[in-house]
Amino acid sequence: MSLTHQALASSYQSLSSQVLASPGFGNEGVTFLAKGQMDWDRLGPTFTKALTSTLYMVSVTLLISAVLGLVLGMLLYTTREGGVLANKPVYWTLNVLVNFVRPIPFIILLTAIGPLTEVIAGSRIGTEAAIVGMVLAATFGAARIVEQNLVSIDPGVVEAAKAMGASPLRIIFSVIIPEALGPLILGFTFMFIAIVDMSAMAGYIGAGGLGDFAIVYGYRAFNDQVTWITVAVIIVIVQIAQLGGNWLAKKIMRR
Image 1: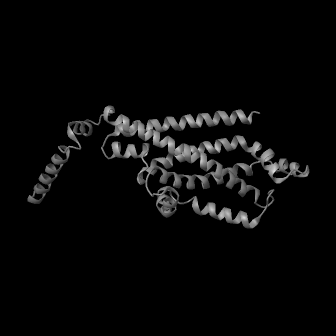
Image 2: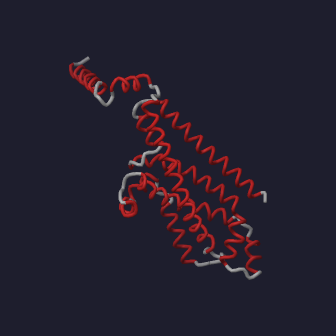
Image 3: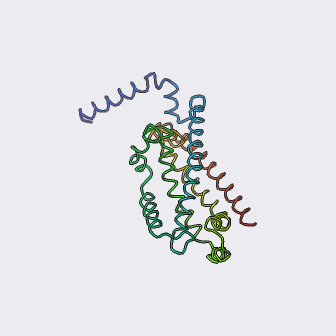
């Protein structure tokens, strides 16, 4: 080994010893990193907080984006040619807007809308800031899902309502939404899963959550056990949502 390599190796060992012996690590930190064990006394409260943050972000985002996405998707469907509110300029504008926002990767969208986030949430970092970006991304995604589900409705049903003299609003609430309710529930179930995925990336702007927990205490600490436990919890959350959505949609479509 050359003198240069020996010097680098000696410096690395010295630095590693200093870091592991620092107050931030202590004996518990050395054991945790060396053996890759889950120290629940130390990580339990942090994990619980991360889980709570994820559920909060996902719930708020789903509630707001579901309403906004339903309205936007309904407008896309009803303003298209032959729709009950046919309006070509409105449809073209909304269609371009949705196509413009949807392809942007979420992590880039979070940074790109920084000024807007600061106006709405008062900051570009934190849970509220992440929710702004998540709502924006989820709304346009939900809008397209709603539109696609509504397009599958039998046009004859809508035409029959028109022939009976029903107003556009009556057709929307009495015909269109009831006819597509089952598929819409499945669509929003899919959106829930996508929002969980977004929440994992929200940790990059200080929002916390399970994704941030897995990166900080799993990946960066070389602890695969932390990472896989976090993955397992996320899978459980998604499975519960998927089973619940499937059950509710099936029950509605049997009526």
